[in-house]
Length: 576
Image (cartoon, rainbow, N blue to C red):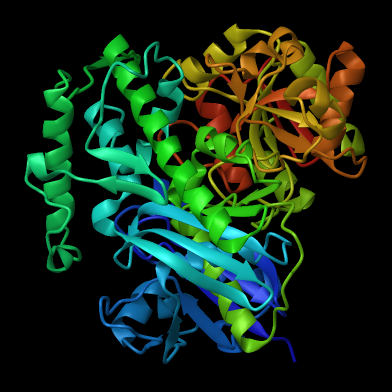
């Protein structure tokens, strides 16, 4: 008998997801946004389609699942181990998609525990310091924990009123970069700041053991009792107003991007002002200082040299690079789906551990390819239905695609199982030659329709890592920034950010892996390093593509030159 656990993530009306764990191993994971085609699956916490996919991957039904776990406590602040709320369960798992099967109860895994488990349990470590930092969940915004073969022990937590995630997102929103879903842009803009000392954000103070937030000047005292203002978002609204006043006091009024209508679409102003970049740089540095103190505290309390990271702030590549370089950190694991979607992984693995299905340390997570894949026959039938001219290159597809990239073309790359998390890792990617910065600009401006200052990342064979990123340490998830070497600056400048960093993905040489074969073929054809410019296969307004139909639609709607999908290559120019 198989031991089957289904974890559900994204409980706060965004980033819904599902993860299936069988006999203690992750069998499938997917984010609901990839199916709904609504970024972050905002304003819903239904995990139904992602869960249905996971079950279909294993060839089972919902009735076959032994236990279902959710990554939040619906009765917070009242503790709870299970939830029997039929209406909530039906909201998460629409019975219509599961033969009208209605689970009677689900197991409650506290939000930050689910985050922590998503980082420690797949790390492969027998012991580690675990740091979770996000906006908030179940009233908590940061957790310091100790992971051992017995599981996780929480050492210290910071309340939602001390949230680093909310601090960071309010800076991004104040600068007109978008709502909380766009806070990651601030990391890119920070690189353009010339003077991170220009603004003193003295309401947030790093100090030994962590940090302290005090917005008393703006109407929110740190000792104020605000638990009753959490679930109805009153505190969050007060906080945003307080931060807006604080940033305005610095001489930076709230920025709203001008919009123009041209070429059939509404185009926002994607520029920035020097003071905006300096504020971004100040916020980024302050965040890194606070995270550094938290990491030092956790490492000291656990006596270990291994560090695991999760939570939405864990998606900050620059901060992760700072933590990786911290004295005392010998090994670092960051969950590639560090945001709320990844809580499905943590909740499922935590329940599997408690049931005795998982023994720690488990297998180290080295790939995030956990989503749907599509057979060549399915792809061919769709291409034929659309009447698209294509060539079937079979196993030579990587060589053909490398030839297109070597000619300076941008290629949509759709291969194998979809990856987990917000970073494309060679399964649903847009790939290009990293030699020229104008290629990066073309992708940002004309393919992705986003800010020209947004960085793109390099994918490289592991053997090239010492020359390009200065280390042979694997970086499989494009989530830890490194200082670019002089060689990287010279040979792959389009992948190097303005601050001299890059966020690499290293790929082991493997002739059976089309992605690795593509990198090798590009090097063979050009005589340059086995490295490519890699960004997610989507445009600004949509999630990463999931199905062949998504890929074809995105390919057709923009100026991508070619699409490598399964063994097939489609080119926009005549003569496929």
